[in-house]
Structures are given as C-alpha cells and as structure tokens.
Amino acid sequence: MEDLVIRDADVVDGSGEPSYRADVVVDDGRIVSIVKEAAAAGCQRPRAMRELNADGLVLSPGFIDMHAHSDLALLRDPDHSAKAAQGVTLEVLGQDGLSYAPVDDRTLEEVRRAITGWNGHGDDIDFDWRSVGEYLDRLDRGIAVNAAYLIPQGTVRALVVGWEDREATPAELDRMRRLVAEGLEQGAMGLSSGLTYTPGMYAEDAELTELCRVVAEYGGYYCPHHRSYGAGALEAYAEMVVLAREADCPLHLAHATMNFGVNKGRAPELLALLDEALASGADITLDTYPYTPGSTTLAAMLPSWANEGGPEAALARLADDATAERIRHHLENIGSDGCHGVPIEWDTIEISGVADPALADFAGHTVEESARRRGEPPWTTARHLLLTDRLAPSILQHVGHEENVRTIMRHPVHTGGSDGILQGAKPHPRAYGTFPHYLGHYVRELGVLSLEECVAHLTARPAARLRLPDRGLVREGYRADVVLFDPQTVAAGSTFEEPRKLPTGIPHVLIDGRFVIENGRRTDELAGRSIRRTPQLT
Image (cartoon, rainbow, N blue to C red; front, top):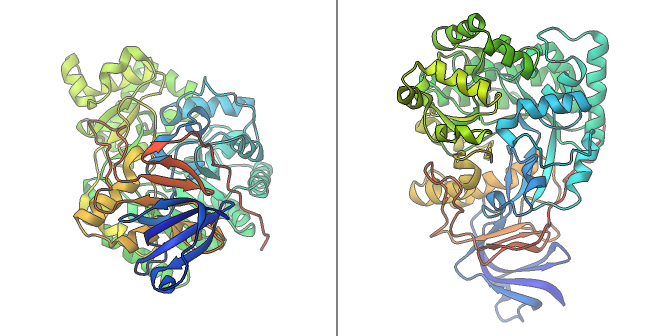
C-alpha cells in the first residue's frame, strides 16, 4: 500500500492549464498516481496508509526561490520556517557573485566580512568546506528545504585576482575558467555575478564572456546582478543580453526590476528589449520579488574605488577624514556606482540590521531620521555606522515603483525570487512573505495574474531554467515536492513593521513526500538536500 493519498485536492499543476480536482497518491518520495474526479467516477478510489483530506485546498508543485540568500541560514537554522512555511521546497544559493565556495582560508575570511550584512559573520558555523562540492556535501547532511548553488564570480575573482580593480592576467583568467569548470562538474547550476559589488564589478565584459563560455559548455546558466538598476539600467540589461549571446550562454536576470526615480514607468522599455532578444533566439529568463523596496548592505552604496582592496581597505578609507569626504561627495553629489549612478537619498535608506547590539536603536529607521535625532548630517551617521559596525549594517532601499513591479511579473519568462536577507532586526518582509504575497495580494486581491499563471511562474518555469527533469509540475513520476494552500486565505504575514511573521493559509508542505509543514506547523523533518546539475558537456 502506498504511503499517502491526498484526497479531493484542486490541482494547479504548474503548467498554466486550468485546475482540476483529483486524488494524488504519493509513495517513496514520488507522485505515483493522479486520479482525476471524472476518471474516478464509478471506480474504486485509491487507498494508502495515510489519507489527507484536501477539500478546499489547492495542491501545487513546491515553490522554487530563484534568488535566495540562505547560504548560511540553512546550516544555522534547522527549522528554516522563513522559507518552509511559504511553501518553498527549493532555493537557489550563491547569488550576486558572493558566497562561500570556492575559497581558500584568506578568501573565506574576506568574503565572510564582505557579506556579513547578508548572512551574518558565521561565527556559529563550522566552515569545514572550501570547494563547491564540499559545500554541497555539507548541505547533504540535512537541511530544511532543497538547495541548488551558483558559482559566485566575485568570490572566484577574489580567490584568483584579489580585490584590486585591474584586468586579470591570461594565467589568472585560465585559473578562473578552471575553477568555474570544477564547480560545474561538482554540481553547480551556473554562474552568478554582482556587478555593483566588489570585486566582481572589476571584471570587464571580455572576462565575464570567457567564464560564461565555460558555463555554456556544461549546460549551466548565467545569473547577473548587472551593473545598474538606476541610471543606465536599460543599458546594463542590454549589456548582459549581448554578453550572454556572445558566449552562447542562457541568461537569467536577477531581481530584474527598474528602480529609482529615473526609471519610473519604464518597465515596458525593459520588456521590449527582452522581447526583441527572445524573438531572435536568445534564451532569457528573469526573477523578481513582489515588493517595491530593495535590500542590501550599507557598504554596497559606496563607490567601488572606496571598496577596492577588500573590507579592511574600505574601513581605512572611511576612517580617513579627507577620503571620507571624497566618498560623501561621490554618494551625495555625483552618484556612486555602488548606488547605481544615482545620488543617494538618505531618507530612502532604512537600516534593517546591525551586528553590534549597541547600535540596535538604528534598526527600523532611515539614516536621515537617525541623523536628525543625533543632530548631525546623514553622512556622519552613515559613516559612524559603517566604522563602528565594521561594514555590517544591512539596509532597505525604498526606491521602487509599483507599476514596474506589476508589469514585469506578467511577462512570460518571469519567475519568483525572494532575494531574502534573513539577517537583522528588521529584515525585508520578502524574506518571509514573497510567495504567499504573490498568491494572496497579486492573484486574489489584485488579479494581476491568474492563479494558474502565478503557480507556473513559481514552479514549472524556474524548474525548466534549472533543467530539473522531475520537479516543478504535478505529474506521475515526479518528486513529491508539493504545497497545499487555501486560495481564499493564503497571505504573507510579514510586514515592514513585523517582518518575521509567518504566512497564513499554507497548512501543508511536503518535500520528497515528507511533511515539513503539517497543519500549519513546522515538523522536525530535514528533508532537503543539494540539487546538483549533472554536467553534460555540449
């Protein structure tokens, strides 16, 4: 007798086709039978050791978070309800060109310092890996949800070239190509880059193209956080399209939105650019989160020259009064490349988290608010935070536009990604709410997408980008990574005021046929594992 039958579910199978009512039978981690109501008329219904009444619930494939920052959280927090409770069954890690493999001892410590605001410093983690394969092996010891990994180009460059703004030598480029190939052979899905973050931003297009050629050879994809989401955003998107086509490499645009005042209402221009490339044969997908503010670190706002040489060099520049004044001038008057070429507006920069408990009062307030309270210019406050917290503060950046968010999410190549930073006292609510927010707010309340369309965006489309042969659809023989939710009540619980509230209306989540969320509560199952691409040289 099979393990489980889920009875009378409204199946939204990920294909975009209309839903249907069915009994879904699960055994040994897979969907073994789908008995539609019409086909079951007059027939004996399937039986199993356990039955779950799903009347009134939608059964869909598990949601795939195409842009996650849970690289350490999955190891630190076995519960990981931030994602499991949303119905996320797979996260894609290694984003924005900075993560923790491949590294040596020096690079590991530098990267840990550079992205403390994303993941914490990791003092509670045993960093017993150095290669991509070893990191994936570490995940395989047991995690809450499945995880895939992108090789971070900035980390590779830090390992080979360092944090200097210079061209890689031919020997260094050869070594970077070998590291990318090794990571893909060990199971990575592709390559990410953060082209407004050091040191990845120091790579010229020719260097990136060579790395993408390696990715293409192994059947992976390139996922850039490109060079600007503000001034010059369209040119930056076009640059990535040209680069990927030159390398003959599939392209997935990370958190593909149009932010800052200069881009208000310009999402149709971005989509026209992509449509033209798609029509001519380009392989392009993108992900977005369903919110207007962005989220990153305060140090990321600095001009790239201020971060050259790594975290210690950046702190030394901030400590020097004359250099700090140059930084202020670039930020406030010119528009730094770290702030996407737009002069910074301190009233849009909200501190979301700090590492030093003595600075906790800054969290939840904009830099301008804190500066006013302290009776000093905003840059003085920002500089104080960067120096005292040693580059650790994370931020929300309130610079997005709702019409752009809605326009982009309708596009046929769109997928969902939380870009969820789980650190800090006031993290972005997208970390805990992205997927139910799509279903509750943008489907049920606003009708921006139909339920069937939205589920396809969150399941089958990302699975296709990842080239997963048995995930992303409700099909016989597929892995039993499924979500059951109430379409009338599903909603994000997280808000900007209470960003860690869990969602409502998602009573059951299964990974590999095992309940990780049951009756709305997290079980003790660690059903997740690394999901590795089987490299196939083209």
